Length: 116
Length: 110
View 1: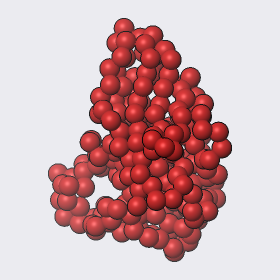
View 2: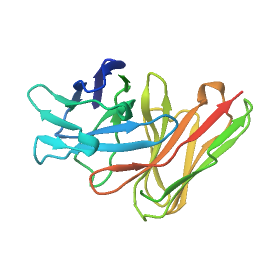
View 3: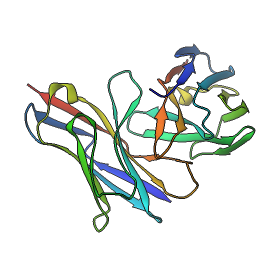
């Protein structure tokens, strides 16, 4: 069984400030981990993914995340927030088994607000 | 963008009526998925398919059925819609190391 916990349903930062969105996972097998972003009234776009290569993963739009097995965490960061980063962010986990069958388990999402 | 389309994009229907949502892909991927998105719940897997005529249940499959007669099409059917099925429905396909999502269908059951 897998699960994802996103701490904080709503995070508010000032433009230029550090963005930190927290994600903790539970998985009985080595996981693949993902961060998706959803802008209002749109679908989900992949930000970055961890698939057992480097533990520090860089994604689009200046975001990165670090896989920490000992802490079962995969927190998303960005050094300097832009107004355009305002969106909802979802962390997701899947197991590595089953070929390319990625049944994702999602967290409940974190809404990021960026204040001018 | 991965070639995934969903139809309709918006639908309003009455309680008790059947509804079918369509997902179409042009990528020839084997695996296809239906999720629903609700505030405070993130996305939850309804059903998925691992090939033509091969489907399985997800975590919230009650009240839903699916069919896949062709690689490119995956249909989600609500046999008798209820207000609790008001949601945004997303289709997804699996590529190499990630899933690609369609634009979503907003369904309102009145």
